[in-house]
Image (cartoon, rainbow, N blue to C red):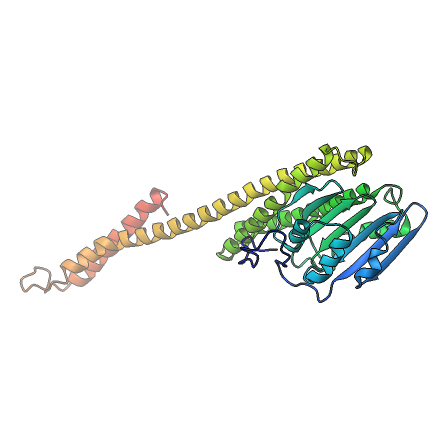
Length: 354
């Protein structure tokens, strides 16, 4: 997962619209993947040359251009200029620390979302910023590297499954958002399983390493919450927006995605409360264990306190102590000390303190 606290940014003090990549370089070269389709035909192309994709700009069919890699500014600048993208849009695309949002530029809509998903290895959650531009008859998507959650959509286009090749560009944008939100559920389920494992370990073998697991889950939930709460407003704005770029039928599908975001938010809040309760349980268990240890130590000290007193009295070795030269002094004293210890242990057990 991405860190909650971003490193020092390099664009501080620059003029608005200055293009500079803010984020990690995650791929060597910028690549373009193009899908051009309608109900009757389909064309797919993958290239590294900007000129190869510009021929699809004025296509009568629906065009989806997915850009992998954001670090080569000159290529993205040429690409953005060809599609008439505002310099502020390009600046936001290159800045991978944006929060989810939507902006209306009349001729196109600019949407920013966070793609969070589990790779096939399920070792660590992956996250990156996805910028989507919805225009008349086309969708442009920008991501930091190859590898995403859109392969199912690509298969639907290739094999003419579902409604995607029968609908417009707005439906394509909806499907991109829908797949991103659906993968949120998979990640949330994974976090739920991790919470169950932490709970079981807390009950069976509480240890300090649980604290690290709890704090990791807590940070991930904070990042999730910061990604999904603004996304709810983005989807809601698209649903309510009276834009010629979004057909009325598509708003029905967007409403379904909006409901999913509400469900995600409720699940996140529940998991956050559960994480807090797990942390409280751990701290309580640690305190209880410490209290038990202190209880045992206190009882041991209490038992030895009168014995120490007796040993201290007869350890003074004054010349005229009556029992000093008595033959049975040592065994009697030892017997008295043992009796005192036994009586105190019996008393503690009778009080159920042991």
